[in-house]
Image 1 (cartoon, rainbow, N blue to C red):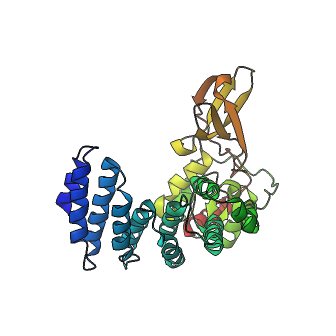
Image 2 (cartoon, one colour; image 1 turned 90 degrees about the horizontal axis):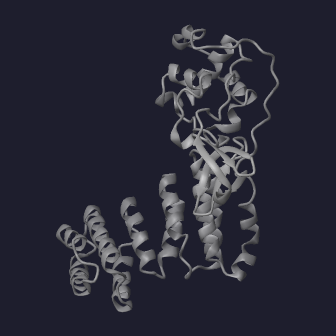
Image 3 (spheres, rainbow, N blue to C red; image 1 turned 90 degrees about the vertical axis):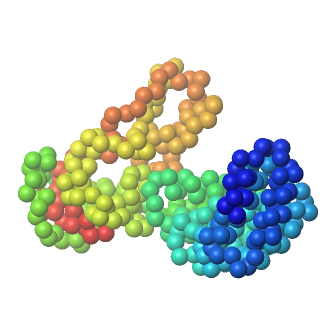
Length: 352
C-alpha cells in the first residue's frame, strides 16, 4: 500500500490507465482485516490518486463506495475521519446517516468539528431530521466549543457553506434552528464596573507579587469581569473572543509573563491579534483586525467587545495600510486594583 501511495504521488495527471491499475490493486488489498494504520495508508493513496489523476468513472466510484462503506464506521477515530472525507468525495448515500452518530459519540471537539466541516458541502441524501441534527450541532459548537477568536469565524464559514446547500423547502422547515444560529453564542459579559483609581502599577511595583502565594480566587473571578477582562477573553465557556483564550493560561505562562502581558500589552503582540490602520482617500481612518480580504475589499473587526461588528473598506479607496504597534488591549487595567486584589486576580487566572 505504501508503494501504491508512492506510485500515485509520482504519476502524471493524465495517467488514467495507471489510476485504474492502482485502484484495482487497492481494492484487492482492502479487506476488513486491515489495521488502522494500513487503512489510513490506503485511504491516503486513494486521495492522492484522485487529486493527481481525477475522479474515477461512475462504475469505479460505486465499487469503491461499496468497499469502503463496509469499513465505516471503524473503532479508530482517525480512520473514521479519513473515511468520512473519502465517502463524501465518492458521494456515498450512507455517509450522512453513519456520520451524524459519530458527532454525538466523538470524545473531542476537534473530532466533532472535523465531521461538521466535512459534511458541510454534501447536497444530497439528507432528511429534514438529519439537517436539523447537523445545524443543532453547529449551534451547540458555538456555545460549547472552546477556542480563541478564529473559532466563531470558522463556524460561521461552515454554516454559510452548509446553508448554501439547502433547498427552499428545507430552509422553511429549519427556520427555527437557523434563527437560533443568529443569536449570540454566549451571553454578553457583565458590564465593567466603575472603580476608583488606586495606583498606576508597573512591573517593578509588583516584583514581590510574582513569588507571593495565595489569593482569593472567588474574588479574582469577580474582578476578572469588573475590570473588563471578560469583555475580550474567554475562560472555559465564558467571556469574549476578541483576545486570547485564557483557559489553562497558568499552565502555559509563568506569573511574570501574565503580569507583563496585562501591564504592558503592547510589548509583545501576536500577529494573529495585531491590528492595522487603514487610511482612505476620503480621509477616513479605520483601525481594527483584518478578518477577511479579497480582491475588492478588506473586512475589519473594529470593536474588541463585539467580534461580530464588521467594517468593509474598498481597496480602491485605500491610501495606506500599516500594522499597528499598539495592542487592542488597553493599558492600565490593573490601576483600580489593590495589590491584594491583583494577587486574587492572578490566582483565579492561574487556577483555571
